[in-house]
Length: 467
Ligand SMILES: Cc1cc2nc3c(=O)[nH]c(=O)nc-3n(C[C@H](O)[C@H](O)[C@H](O)COP(=O)(O)OP(=O)(O)OC[C@H]3O[C@@H](n4cnc5c(N)ncnc54)[C@H](O)[C@@H]3O)c2cc1C
Image (cartoon, rainbow, N blue to C red; front, top):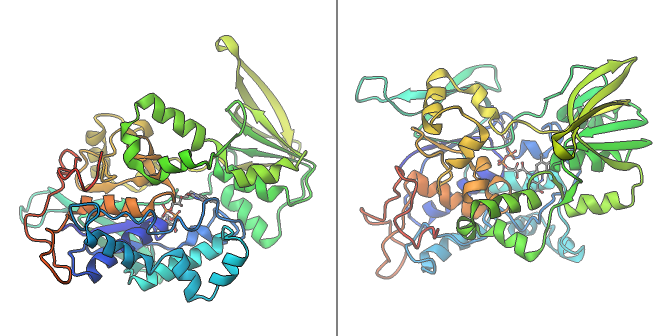
C-alpha cells in the first residue's frame, strides 16, 4: 500500500486521516499518512490564517463533517456489508455531534436550532478529530515539491515525492511519500496592485482582526465567489457609505441549498452520469461566482451594497484614492471600459487553482506537462482528474480534490462529501475491499482483494465506486 503525504491540515486531511484510523481500528490495512502544515490543524479557519477572522459562520451545515455522508465502500465489496458500516460507526466517534458531546456543547447547540458554527469552532472540531485519530502532523511549510528517486534501479526514475519543509524551529527537513495530496486554496495575499488603498484578502482579515481597517466611504470588493461574500459580509458591519462588488457575471447568484442541489454535492456518483453541458450548468448555478444563501439574506437589508458588472483590468493611484479600471462585455462582442474611484479596494478573487505548481521543481513540472498532454492549465488538469481524485497519467500519484469538481463531482472541492473523498483517496492508495468475513470480528483483507486500476483511473469493482 502506498504511503501518503498531505499538504495542509484542513478538513480534507482530517477526513482522510479519520478514515485511515477507522480502518486500522478494525484491523484492516491502512496507509501511513504524514500531514504537513505550518499553521497546525484547521489554520485557514482561524484568525491569522488569512481567509477569515474566525468569527464568521460556516456556510454549510457542520453535520457535513469529516465522515459525511457515512457511506464507506472501501472496506468490503458490497455497499451494505457490515464491515463498511463498522467503518462508519468508527467515524461517528469523530463526528460533529460527538465533538459537541465531548466538549459539553451538544444540548445548547440543539436548543439554539443547530446553528452553523463560527469558523474558529470548526477549526477546534478539526483539531479534536485529528488528535483523536492520531494524526502525524509535521509543523512546517512545504517550500519545494520534488521527486524521490527510485532506490532499487539506481537510475533517476521517480517512485515517490520528496518535499522540502521549513520547520517551525527554523530548520529544514525532507519528507518523502509514495503519493501526495494537495489541499486548500493556497495563500491569500494576492493584490491586483501594490497600493496602500488596495488590500489582499489576508491583509483585509488581518486589519479586521486588529481593528485597523482604514476608514473608507467607497469600497470595492473584487470577486463574486465565497471569498468575496465573506469579505462583503464583514464590510457591511463597518462604517462605509457605499460597497460595490465587482464581478464579470450578470449578477451575483445565490448558492442553492435545495434538496436536489445538495444531493448532487453529497453523492457524486450521480455526477458522472451528467453530460458535460449539464455539469457546467450545475457548476455555474451552484458553485462558481455565487454567494451563500446566508450572506445573500444579510445583504437583503443593505442598500449600501451594489453589483458592478465587469472585469477589473487594473487599479492605479488617483490622488491617494484607487482608480479601478473595469471592462464590461456588451452585446455584439463589444467591450465598454470605464474607471471608478474608490477609497479602498479589496482583491477577493482568490488564488489560482494551480497555486501549488509554483513550488514544483522542473522534473515535477515536466511530469505534469506530460500528464496534461501539453500546457498545464486549470482546464487541462480538471479534465484529467480520475475517480480516485488523482491526476490521470501523473507519476507519482498526485491527488487534487480541489480540481475534481468538473470530472468527479462538485462536492470534492469543498466540505460537501468529505467521507466520500476519503474513500476515493484511500482507494487510490491501494485500500481495497476485504473478502466477506466468515464470521466474528473483522479480518484483514485477503491478498488479491479487488485492485484499483490506477493506470486507467477506473475501479474494477463496480460495488466499490459506482460510476
Ligand atoms: C472563508 C472561507 C469560508 C468557506 N466556507 C465554506 C463552507 O462553509 N462550506 C464549504 O463547503 N466550503 C467552504 N469554503 C471552501 C473551502 O476552501 C474548502 O471547502 C476547504 O478549505 C477545503 O479544506 P481543505 O482541507 O482543502 O483546506 P484548508 O482548510 O484551506 O487547509 C489548507 C491548509 O494548507 C496549509 N498550507 C498551505 N500552504 C502550505 C504549505 N506550503 N505548506 C504547508 N501547509 C500549507 C494551510 O496552512 C491550511 O491550513 C470556504 C472557504 C473560505 C476561504
